[in-house]
Image (cartoon, rainbow over all chains, first blue to last red; front, side):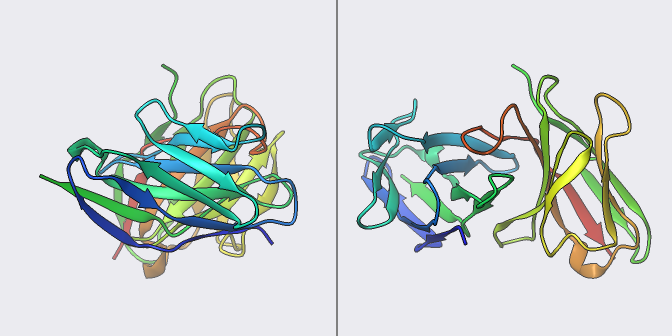
Length: 113
Length: 115
């Protein structure tokens, strides 16, 4: 069965510090991987996705994630975070039938000055 | 920019009452979903809907839940007899393609509080 595991429930960091949010996946079919972000009191928004091709994918706000097949990981990174990056981050993978996204438990990123 | 809209934003109800949560997906999208998020927990899949029928449902989506697309724009989630444990944020989502490789667009959620 398809699943994702987010190893960290909370990650507190200071502004301008680098951050890595970890995600490991389990998939028996072709892998598509997603990171979604949920800002306070809002719905989920797609941050970036891996479908095929280059294993390094980037978002418009400086986040990147690297698909690592050997380690079954899709960790999210940013070299320098801002206060505005404070949010809940969810890793996701399609179910086997491709009819729904399965989300991880989420990682709360808290950026302070 | 097109968006998914949900109403109500917050509903308080008594245990045993029926609740209908409404969603207006993005107009050219074909696939529709309901998810829920109990406070402090993960986002859980409830049901997906395509071509006027359920394409997938989770074990959470039991007989007390139903979905409907009553017209060309609305997509509703009905809970027939609410329980305390139904208290959660319910998110509607829609997509133009399937989740492989389509992107899901989420609404801002409807918070349901069951007393």
